[in-house]
Length: 177
Image (cartoon, rainbow, N blue to C red; front, side, top):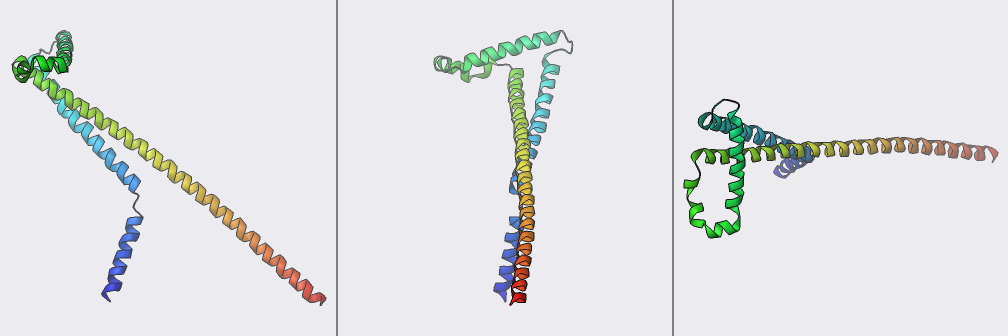
C-alpha cells in the first residue's frame, strides 16, 4: 500500500513539475533582479551624489561647472594612477589615501553604484528580450499545433469517406452476386 501512495505522490510531483514554464520563470527572476539592482543601487548612488554636492559644493548652478571640471580631473588621475607602469613606480604613494580627499572616495563609491545600476538595467532588458523569445516560440508551437489539428481532422474525414466508399462498393458487389 505504501508503494502505491509513494508512486502516486511521485508521479503527481513529476506531472506538476513538468508543467512549470521554466523559461518564463528564469526570465521573471532575471527581470526582478535587474529592476531591484537598478532601483536599489541607483537610489543609493543618487543619494551619495546629492550628499557630495551638498557637502562639498554649493547649490548655485554656476558651481556645477566646477564640479564637472573636478570630475574630469578625477577621471584623468584615475586612469593615470591605475596604469601598470605608474603602479610599479609609485606603489608606496598609491597605497596611501592621502592623495584623495574623503569626497572623492564617496564619489568613487557612487560611481561604481551607478555602474551596477546600469548593469541591472541591462539585465532587465535581457530578461524582456528573453520573454519575447519565449512568446514567439510559444506562438509558433501553438500555430503548428493548430495546423496539425486541422490536418488530423481532414485526414479523419478522408478516412471516413474512404471507408464509406469501400462499404458501398462491397454492398454493390454483394448485390450483384
